[in-house]
Amino acid sequence: GIQVEQSPPDLILQEGANSTLRCNFSDSVNNLQWFHQNPWGQLINLFYIPSGTKQNGRLSATTVATERYSLLYISSSQTTDSGVYFCAVSDVSGTYKYIFGTGTRLKVLA
Amino acid sequence: GAVVSQHPSWVICKSGTSVKIECRSLDFQATTMFWYRQFPKQSLMLMATSNEGSKATYEQGVEKDKFLINHASLTLSTLTVTSAHPEDSSFYICSARQGAAEAFFGQGTRLTVV
Image (cartoon, rainbow over all chains, first blue to last red; front, top):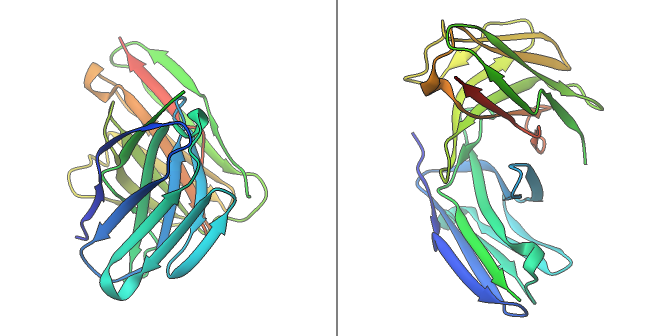
Protein backbone atom coordinates (compact mmCIF):
# COMPACT_ATOMS: atom_id res chain seq x y z
CA GLY A 1 0.00 0.00 0.00
CA ILE A 2 0.89 3.64 -0.22
CA GLN A 3 3.42 4.96 2.30
CA VAL A 4 3.24 8.50 3.68
CA GLU A 5 6.20 10.03 5.49
CA GLN A 6 6.27 13.41 7.16
CA SER A 7 9.23 15.50 8.22
CA PRO A 8 10.43 16.67 10.57
CA PRO A 9 8.88 14.38 13.21
CA ASP A 10 9.31 17.02 15.91
CA LEU A 11 9.72 20.77 15.70
CA ILE A 12 10.17 23.43 18.36
CA LEU A 13 9.79 27.08 17.38
CA GLN A 14 9.89 30.42 19.06
CA GLU A 15 6.70 32.42 18.68
CA GLY A 16 6.81 34.48 15.48
CA ALA A 17 9.04 32.07 13.57
CA ASN A 18 8.15 30.48 10.23
CA SER A 19 8.23 26.77 9.42
CA THR A 20 7.79 24.30 6.58
CA LEU A 21 6.35 20.82 7.10
CA ARG A 22 6.79 18.19 4.42
CA CYS A 23 4.68 15.21 3.35
CA ASN A 24 6.12 12.61 0.95
CA PHE A 25 4.04 9.83 -0.53
CA SER A 26 5.10 6.72 -2.38
CA ASP A 27 2.49 6.46 -5.11
CA SER A 28 0.04 8.48 -7.19
CA VAL A 29 -2.76 10.11 -5.23
CA ASN A 30 -5.99 11.81 -6.18
CA ASN A 31 -6.71 13.49 -2.85
CA LEU A 32 -4.62 15.06 -0.12
CA GLN A 33 -5.60 16.89 3.04
CA TRP A 34 -3.69 18.57 5.86
CA PHE A 35 -4.99 18.42 9.43
CA HIS A 36 -4.10 19.86 12.80
CA GLN A 37 -4.86 17.60 15.75
CA ASN A 38 -5.55 19.62 18.86
CA PRO A 39 -4.71 18.45 22.42
CA TRP A 40 -8.18 16.92 22.78
CA GLY A 41 -7.70 14.76 19.71
CA GLN A 42 -9.99 16.63 17.34
CA LEU A 43 -8.77 16.79 13.75
CA ILE A 44 -9.13 20.25 12.31
CA ASN A 45 -9.26 20.49 8.51
CA LEU A 46 -6.60 22.85 7.21
CA PHE A 47 -6.44 22.24 3.47
CA TYR A 48 -7.97 19.98 0.86
CA ILE A 49 -5.23 20.20 -1.73
CA PRO A 50 -4.74 17.39 -4.26
CA SER A 51 -2.63 19.76 -6.35
CA GLY A 52 -1.61 23.39 -6.59
CA THR A 53 -1.28 26.04 -3.90
CA LYS A 54 -3.74 27.41 -1.36
CA GLN A 55 -3.51 30.01 1.37
CA ASN A 56 -5.58 30.62 4.47
CA GLY A 57 -4.32 33.40 6.69
CA ARG A 58 -0.90 32.51 8.10
CA LEU A 59 -1.06 29.03 6.60
CA SER A 60 -0.44 27.97 3.05
CA ALA A 61 0.06 24.64 1.33
CA THR A 62 1.47 23.39 -1.94
CA THR A 63 1.10 19.95 -3.48
CA VAL A 64 3.23 18.76 -6.39
CA ALA A 65 1.48 15.51 -7.20
CA THR A 66 3.84 14.59 -10.05
CA GLU A 67 6.78 14.68 -7.62
CA ARG A 68 4.78 13.06 -4.80
CA TYR A 69 5.07 15.64 -2.06
CA SER A 70 3.16 18.39 -0.32
CA LEU A 71 4.34 21.25 1.87
CA LEU A 72 2.57 23.11 4.66
CA TYR A 73 3.90 26.57 5.53
CA ILE A 74 3.21 28.22 8.85
CA SER A 75 4.20 31.87 9.11
CA SER A 76 4.45 34.02 12.24
CA SER A 77 3.73 31.00 14.43
CA GLN A 78 1.66 31.37 17.59
CA THR A 79 1.45 29.19 20.69
CA THR A 80 -2.00 28.07 19.57
CA ASP A 81 -0.37 26.46 16.51
CA SER A 82 1.11 23.79 18.80
CA GLY A 83 -0.10 20.26 18.25
CA VAL A 84 0.34 17.51 15.70
CA TYR A 85 0.06 18.10 11.97
CA PHE A 86 -0.96 15.25 9.71
CA CYS A 87 -1.22 14.91 5.98
CA ALA A 88 -3.47 12.20 4.58
CA VAL A 89 -3.71 10.87 1.04
CA SER A 90 -6.03 8.65 -0.90
CA ASP A 91 -4.76 6.64 -3.82
CA VAL A 92 -6.24 6.30 -7.29
CA SER A 93 -8.06 3.01 -6.55
CA GLY A 94 -11.36 4.82 -6.02
CA THR A 95 -12.01 3.70 -2.43
CA TYR A 96 -11.55 7.30 -1.15
CA LYS A 97 -9.93 6.00 2.03
CA TYR A 98 -7.28 8.22 3.57
CA ILE A 99 -3.91 6.91 4.68
CA PHE A 100 -2.33 9.16 7.25
CA GLY A 101 1.24 10.30 7.39
CA THR A 102 3.53 9.83 10.36
CA GLY A 103 2.81 13.32 11.68
CA THR A 104 4.84 16.35 12.77
CA ARG A 105 4.62 17.34 16.43
CA LEU A 106 4.98 21.12 16.70
CA LYS A 107 5.58 23.09 19.85
CA VAL A 108 5.60 26.88 19.73
CA LEU A 109 7.21 28.60 22.69
CA ALA A 110 6.10 32.01 23.98
CA GLY B 1 -17.10 23.14 7.01
CA ALA B 2 -19.36 20.15 7.43
CA VAL B 3 -19.98 18.61 10.84
CA VAL B 4 -19.43 15.02 11.88
CA SER B 5 -20.63 14.18 15.37
CA GLN B 6 -19.24 11.20 17.28
CA HIS B 7 -20.59 9.84 20.56
CA PRO B 8 -19.67 9.14 23.21
CA SER B 9 -16.53 11.26 23.65
CA TRP B 10 -15.23 8.88 26.25
CA VAL B 11 -16.35 5.58 27.72
CA ILE B 12 -15.11 3.22 30.40
CA CYS B 13 -16.32 -0.36 30.27
CA LYS B 14 -15.61 -3.63 32.00
CA SER B 15 -13.64 -6.36 30.31
CA GLY B 16 -15.90 -8.71 28.39
CA THR B 17 -18.66 -6.20 27.67
CA SER B 18 -19.47 -4.53 24.34
CA VAL B 19 -19.38 -0.85 23.51
CA LYS B 20 -21.10 0.98 20.64
CA ILE B 21 -19.77 4.21 19.16
CA GLU B 22 -21.93 6.34 16.86
CA CYS B 23 -20.80 8.57 14.03
CA ARG B 24 -23.23 10.97 12.34
CA SER B 25 -22.79 13.38 9.47
CA LEU B 26 -25.07 16.25 10.47
CA ASP B 27 -25.31 18.35 7.32
CA PHE B 28 -24.37 16.15 4.39
CA GLN B 29 -24.95 12.65 3.11
CA ALA B 30 -21.89 10.52 3.59
CA THR B 31 -21.55 7.92 0.87
CA THR B 32 -18.55 6.51 2.69
CA MET B 33 -17.56 6.45 6.34
CA PHE B 34 -14.26 5.37 7.82
CA TRP B 35 -13.12 4.22 11.23
CA TYR B 36 -9.62 4.87 12.56
CA ARG B 37 -7.75 3.92 15.66
CA GLN B 38 -4.99 5.97 17.27
CA PHE B 39 -2.56 4.93 19.97
CA PRO B 40 -0.80 7.55 22.12
CA LYS B 41 1.76 9.60 20.19
CA GLN B 42 1.09 7.65 16.99
CA SER B 43 -0.64 8.32 13.72
CA LEU B 44 -4.17 7.30 12.77
CA MET B 45 -4.54 3.74 11.50
CA LEU B 46 -7.43 2.94 9.19
CA MET B 47 -9.56 0.07 10.51
CA ALA B 48 -12.38 -0.18 7.99
CA THR B 49 -14.34 1.52 5.24
CA SER B 50 -18.11 1.35 5.15
CA ASN B 51 -20.60 2.27 2.45
CA GLU B 52 -24.27 2.74 3.17
CA GLY B 53 -26.21 -0.50 2.92
CA SER B 54 -23.25 -2.76 2.29
CA LYS B 55 -20.75 -4.71 4.36
CA ALA B 56 -17.71 -2.92 5.66
CA THR B 57 -14.28 -3.52 4.16
CA TYR B 58 -11.73 -4.18 6.86
CA GLU B 59 -8.02 -3.45 6.64
CA GLN B 60 -5.59 -6.29 6.96
CA GLY B 61 -5.13 -7.38 10.56
CA VAL B 62 -8.40 -5.91 11.86
CA GLU B 63 -10.71 -8.51 13.38
CA LYS B 64 -14.13 -8.07 11.80
CA ASP B 65 -15.84 -10.12 14.51
CA LYS B 66 -14.41 -7.91 17.23
CA PHE B 67 -15.05 -4.57 15.53
CA LEU B 68 -18.57 -4.68 14.08
CA ILE B 69 -19.41 -1.85 11.73
CA ASN B 70 -22.90 -0.94 10.57
CA HIS B 71 -23.66 1.82 8.07
CA ALA B 72 -27.45 1.87 8.21
CA SER B 73 -28.03 5.21 6.50
CA LEU B 74 -26.22 7.96 4.63
CA THR B 75 -25.79 9.85 7.89
CA LEU B 76 -25.05 7.18 10.48
CA SER B 77 -22.37 4.56 11.03
CA THR B 78 -21.71 2.63 14.21
CA LEU B 79 -18.69 0.77 15.52
CA THR B 80 -19.28 -1.89 18.16
CA VAL B 81 -16.30 -3.24 20.04
CA THR B 82 -17.42 -6.69 21.14
CA SER B 83 -16.11 -8.53 24.21
CA ALA B 84 -13.74 -5.67 24.92
CA HIS B 85 -10.40 -6.31 26.59
CA PRO B 86 -7.81 -3.90 27.99
CA GLU B 87 -5.78 -4.09 24.76
CA ASP B 88 -8.77 -2.58 22.91
CA SER B 89 -8.35 0.61 24.92
CA SER B 90 -7.58 3.34 22.41
CA PHE B 91 -8.80 6.51 20.72
CA TYR B 92 -11.29 5.77 17.94
CA ILE B 93 -12.11 8.38 15.28
CA CYS B 94 -14.66 8.28 12.50
CA SER B 95 -14.62 10.15 9.21
CA ALA B 96 -17.24 10.84 6.58
CA ARG B 97 -16.95 11.75 2.91
CA GLN B 98 -19.30 12.39 0.06
CA GLY B 99 -17.54 10.75 -2.84
CA ALA B 100 -14.14 12.30 -3.45
CA ALA B 101 -15.00 15.50 -1.59
CA GLU B 102 -13.18 16.76 1.50
CA ALA B 103 -13.29 14.36 4.45
CA PHE B 104 -14.52 15.48 7.87
CA PHE B 105 -13.77 13.86 11.19
CA GLY B 106 -15.65 13.28 14.41
CA GLN B 107 -14.35 14.41 17.78
CA GLY B 108 -13.11 10.92 18.63
CA THR B 109 -13.98 8.45 21.39
CA ARG B 110 -11.54 7.53 24.11
CA LEU B 111 -12.25 3.94 25.16
CA THR B 112 -10.84 2.53 28.38
CA VAL B 113 -11.45 -1.12 29.19
CA VAL B 114 -10.89 -2.06 32.84
